Image 1 (cartoon, rainbow, N blue to C red):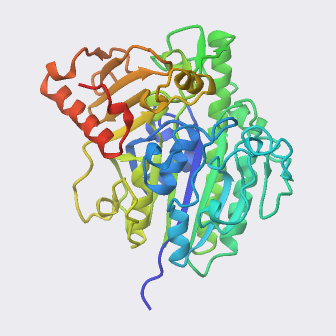
Image 2: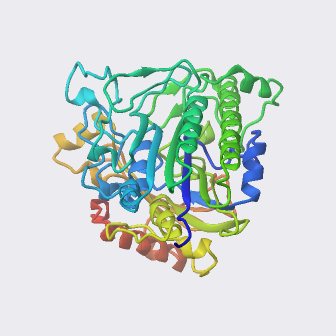
Image 3: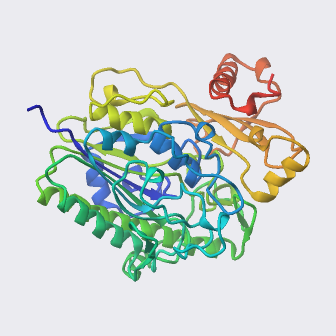
Length: 472
């Protein structure tokens, strides 16, 4: 018999920015377990979220395709007919076919909210939430302990294989880690793949155990250099009252939740050691997107700034993957093909991302020179406004090229008739993105700008994104 295929544990938190981990030496977080894990891993310092929003990222993570290609261009929400299609080929489908025992724990947010179908779901789902029954909508995940979208961290709920809602009085991260440990303990013989989706540090920030808040009682009052205003709005425009004082409290709560992630990640690592699975288990720790936390006067995500698109990403496979930090670009669409590549499994023809397994295994040095980012109008009022004027809202929003040196953005706005803006950020000279170069005609700029512009248009054409219409 050949060598047993590696187990895969993929842990990702919601709205956890790249700057908020100890080894980054930026935010004042406390992550000793994660920092030690990073020393045993390849850490991608330039990992980004293809679309810094929950559902689009998740659709790309599981399929290796861009959000426009999956049709999940915005969050699965009440009022919009958006969900991950049953016929998409996801990593869970592939791994199950290859004999893996598959499991998914935590937030899913890829199913149609049940309130789009009925006012009285048998599952008691509310808001954007949904019970995803056994079958093709689970995309190959056999073990299921999940929910759609519901931000109640201290009193979470879940579904398994019936519509009966399971109510829990325990911090969601801790409870989901308990379930992950149970799953691992029951699957030590055959190869398994477990995805654990923690909702914190996503808002509401105050819903975090006191023991983690206590760690930040004496935190000095300070902010990132690009936090420069007393009023803050989330990416959808609603203002947040309280200015810097309230922001400081939210920041402490955010850091506290991350301390809780660290604590529970340590429990997972201990379980792997105790079960004798250390040597042949690939473990990834990452996030779906970041959190602005007041940078540029913005809360939350869905913008092209590094606090929004930048995510932590560390991957460990002892004696197979090098212990190092790398500036190799890693995009969401690359994760599915890379994990399959590490497991020695062929990627589906549908994949649009790159398989970075040869790089991780030291078999080749070639790495991507650019990654592509996107955001589409998703608020109901904006979508309806485009439809009323017989315009395609999917041709609006913003698209960007991100390299190690630059972020090149074209922003057409989220409202019909908005003026187009083209911006270039020099990331090494201006890491806080405070001095963008405003561009009128990319074709009349220097060679670097022209190359970035052509790369962006080429990508848009490859995925048939209507955003390309009207560009020079």
